[in-house]
Structures are given as C-alpha cells and as structure tokens.
Image (cartoon, rainbow, N blue to C red):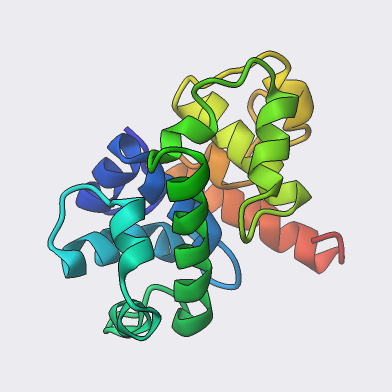
Length: 188
C-alpha cells in the first residue's frame, strides 16, 4: 500500500483510486508532500464518496469546488488555484480518458508515450511527469517499456529523492533530507 500521506485512510485511497493519485501529484508543490497527498482524501470526504469521479468533479460549479478545496484544512496553501487546476485535470480525464484516470497509463506500451500524456496534464512539467512514472513503476508495478530510463534519475533503484521513494515514515525523512541537501546546494 502507498504510504505517502502518512495517513492510513488517505494512503488507502491513493492506492486504489488513480484519480486521487493524480490529484495528489498535482497538489505536490509548495507544500509538504504528505499534506499534498492528503488533499484527495479531504476532497473525497467533503464530497461524501469512497472514490473520486473526474466527471463529478468537473461538473461542480467552479465557485463551489473552490469552496470545497478551501474548507479547513485546505487542500493546498493556494486552494483556489489548485481547485481550478484539479477541475481542468478532471475535464481532460473525462473528455480524453473516458472518465478513468487509470486510462492515462493502462494502454501505453512505452514510458515515452506515458511521459507525453502526463506532460499534457495541468501541473505536470518534465520533472513531475518523470517522478509520476517512477511512482507508478516503483509503488504500483505499472512499468511500461523503458520506465526507468524515461523517469531517470527518479526511477533509480534505491534512490531516496522524491515522492516515488516514500514507502514509510523513515523513507519520508530520507527524501526530505535529500531535498533539503539539494536546496542548500542550490540544486533544487
């Protein structure tokens, strides 16, 4: 089971709900990763659902979804802009992937294809797309051809660099220490 949010219920949602995992990745910026990946759980609780629906989230009026995202605790330090980004993501999932976030990766043959798909999603730049490919490969056994190469350096065996490597409280601290070291060197 995924252990990124460091909350059993939230991590269970991330493990079984591909949309929750994508939303967590979108939220993983400018805040601690465990808080980012707790965001989808808060959304699910507020919508009173066990599984997030891209179609449902996309259909909620923007003002209403911003209010949902802003409830305490907010899903992000910038809840309004992230709520809008999540709705854009859900529109794409609804329109291009039949409403199922897993369709972003289930039918790809190569990691290059997956990388290109991810880069088209709101909030996914080069590094985030690579990190997500590493996360899928390392933690969910989704391993299209060349996944380690395309996700380099994040897919490396034994690395402790990103959310893809967080599997316990101990690895969370190792990843956090790595990021702090890179920031201190001006490399992150």
